[in-house]
Image (tube, rainbow, N blue to C red):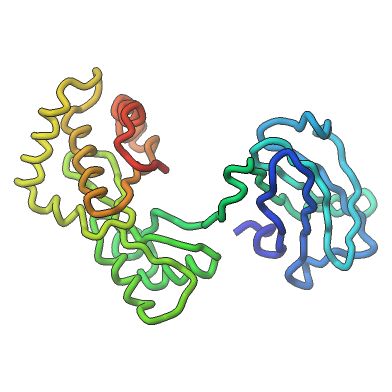
Length: 282
């Protein structure tokens, strides 16, 4: 975790676009307190482009003075984008970075909504993670997530194990069932997020799975050059089964670089993005 998030509270982190907001940066521990004999300077960076309204120059620094142990920074946040408040402590000729604080400005349609933080794709030691399902869920709550799904490779049961570990416990974390689906002879990794049953279990009846995928492939017909028709049909079958289970189908790491090339192939990835049979991608 970045020191900015570990040692300071920043409020608000989400602000209205095209308006001025005051950001309060509060130290959480003694070693991160703002000192009276130190000069603090702010550099502001709109991440996507320099603000036209504020005319803030990238080389410009502005002194900021702590009030009651906090930094209170009024700033105009232009457009819908990410912003950096870069704070340095200056003592003589020495500069020390205090933090690289991130603020997000949203237009009215999104600003009025409540943001939730979560992780759709996590692993335990039931596949290639390091901790137990219960530990992973506990760690997700510790860092402040609102929801999470344990999505071990080819396994739905660990996500249920994580849920059962906190059965009867009143926690402010929604534990969603899930799994990472690996269809045979298909390099596309797919997450079943929130489905009521396992897609991997359906695939274990491989004769039925392949006959159904063959039917999908026949219905789809011709695909663009370079696209493996079976792999594409397999993806369609998986996403349809996930939705039947009431879940969301995620296209995982589409440009995963392994063995000196992209996996899945660029042609298949492009066709999936063109047709968008998935509900979301990461």
